Amino acid sequence: MSSTPFYMFGLIFFGLFTLFLPDFTAYSLNYVKANHVAEAIIESGQKNGGIDQAVVNQILDDRNISSDNWSIIYTENLVDFNEPMTVQISGSYKIKALNIISKAFGDSINTNLPINIQRETVGQVYRR
Image (cartoon, rainbow, N blue to C red):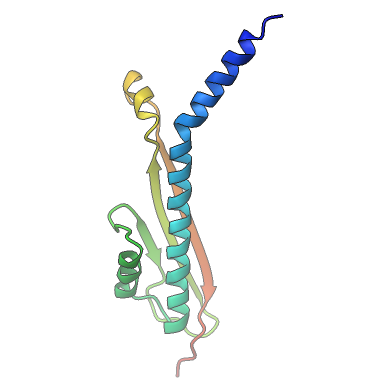
């Protein structure tokens, strides 16, 4: 029996894997970067008793993240000891490998992968 179909299937699989590998890597890097930003915002909020817009902007600048591409929702009031504090970061990653296919189908393929991060903690500062 000929092994040509096996090799063709393997070649197609390897080609698709190589086509999407850079996008998988870039998506995972963006996801990890969003996790690190959320953790940094939460840690700062715990130390200071609340989250401030200036601190959020500083953390974004330190990590080279544009606030235009990400939506950041956080607890804005001062937080006392054992009161909840939340941070939600939302964004998306556009798969660039599908641009070739979406041009052929008239942009009917959704090429955005969502990135949604939510962190919750409690305040660590006593207020009088």
